[in-house]
Image 1 (cartoon, rainbow, N blue to C red):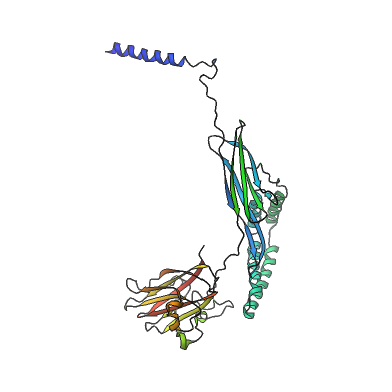
Image 2: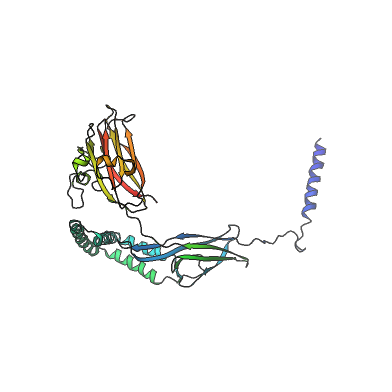
Length: 391
């Protein structure tokens, strides 16, 4: 048996030698394959447009900028890039490193930039503040922040100033962006459709082309987030530092809407969802919360809040978004005046445990809506109201 295995081993070896001898580097196109794979281009694009509007939604500035990043298939490295933009009139190119360096400067000057931003936001609100008392408070806040800003500038260290100077020098010496850059920022002159093509060429001279239509949309004002007065029901949280936690929630007429709710106070933070106080509604249901807030017609909002109900009695608490057409509590109960509503029962709840809820509603044609808080059957508490714009 061993003799036969020995013969088979040599037969296999001889066959392998015979096959490999067929590969001859002296023969053209034998044994070597030419790489005929070319680059497959692609690119990613990110809209980084910025805009600024005044408080009357008048456009002050718009920068229609898009970040473009080129690439190719992993098997072949594209080393030459050529962008093509049509129409090209008014289009300008920005070095991709410019925003990075500008952000680095902001980081070095974080204390100064933070104060400048706070001042800018207040100055933005001031021209459209019709309440003289609110305007006076804003002006005082601006004056205080400006004094803090001067102090912050004076306290900048030599090291920080040198770092800023170095970054500014890097910006000054940045090479101009070109259509041959792998990554660049394109600034378009305005809204419209643009054809952006990319040719990728590898080191063997092989190339391919791809193009896409990039839509530049007209900038629109950011929908402002409505302000809810005393959302956590704590003392001293009105715009001027006053308030007993309920002043923003008093109805125009207690005879038509009911008396304002009571206040529940805790001495330690963390017991209530927010701060030291919460709105308290006795079980008889005679207390209400009423606040009219400004909204943007056509916008959709999400209102969130926390509730806690006494489980010793069967009852419920209701938070409603009511049309400003309602002038009494009875009218607020009419289906035609209820924009959105949520009712939570004491069944299944745990005493002293707050639960978070959310109500999504559309402003429709209204410029203001009423947040209405009511209860029945059992004592309950509400706290930590917040509202956001649904994107």
